[in-house]
Amino acid sequence: MHKLQCISVATLAAKVFSRLSTRLKSSGGRPSAPLGSRILTNPDDIFKHNMWDHVQWTEEDKENARKKAQENSCVQIPLREQGKFDTEAHQYWDKFYEMHRDKFFKDRKWLFLEFPELLPLDANSRATTRRQGDRQVGIPSPGGSNMDSETSHHQHSGTTHCRPNADCQTACQGASQEKNEDATQTSTFPGQHASFRILEVGCGVGNIHNLRYFHTLKIHPILDYDDSVCHAFVHDICEEMASFPFPPQSLDVILAVFVLSSIHPERMQRAVNRLSTCLKHGGIFLFRDYGRYDFSQLRFKKGRCLSENFYTRGDGTCVYFFTKEEVHEIFSSAGLEELQNLEDRRLQVNRGKKVVMHRVWMQSKYRKSYPPSPS
Picture 1 (tube, rainbow, N blue to C red):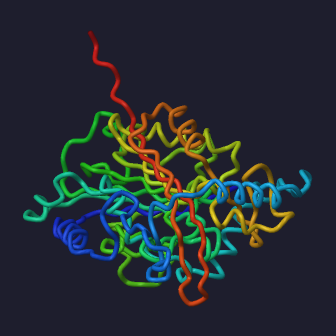
Picture 2 (picture 1 turned 90 degrees about the vertical axis):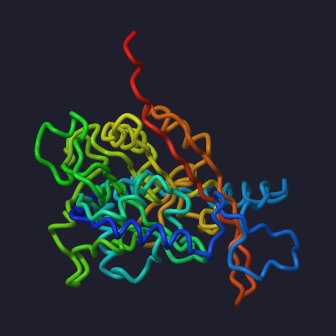
Picture 3 (picture 1 turned 30 degrees about the vertical axis):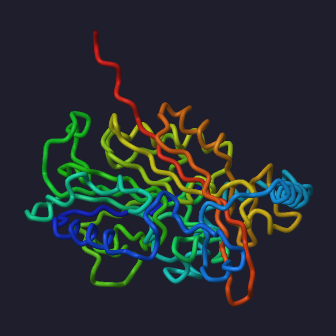
């Protein structure tokens, strides 16, 4: 199974939001346009930057990618050997973290640029008044290698996924103690007094950029961890009978970055269905993950494929590669409406080795609709 360690955070000062907003405004590293705006117009400039945005594939590029994926998936792992990659997934992730700990993945400094929904709408005004709130966070399992990661100006973990039933991280973020929806008043739960709550599924070792000012995860032997601000918990998002430490319809945002791809394709829909019940009406599900024919898919050798577009790495962790249509089907089937569903195609450049890699990621935002008002 895939278990997650999670954390909750409380008592966030409004000045934290001010600091984050200032950083966003002053950040000059990555253009603020959706999915970046560094466009390669002159092929001679290709090695001037580590990453180029909005790359258009030629028909030849598409055909070459399709052939490589077809070739590396023509030999699949025998069915009798596949089960362990699902039932023992947590063991593979545990070994990964035991080996790499917090040294593997980079901070997600791009997070607020692409997902401003993570900040409360009145974050700037709250900076003038010191108030309190709650936040929860959990720890997912990682998977992959630095070559799989979004490096350069994206700087994320290559496989910061929830292990197939992985570590889940809940984040409840808020800066004022306002009345919550009726659904949140039924019982005591972490973050119940917060006016804005985030559940982060698969937070890795805690190097999520939006949390670095608030806490350090328990696995870090650092005094910054404060259990009055953070509450860690373990959860299996694929276990349908397991209960979350918060009630349904109590979350404003769910964030899943490189998480769903580590789950067996047959389990994905049920996991998203279940997570979606935790959203308030009007709440948003933020998603980013691997796209079909990403460089990391095409470099797999024969014999690592489990099923179509689903592979296992040498360390036993697994990864799936999505299309826009598949992403839309998963989230719309969970009763969510599309706000954004993008295919992020880039050129990642190793300027030292003069190597160019086609990267493909999916980035989506889906909202839980309000029920129709009674006539």
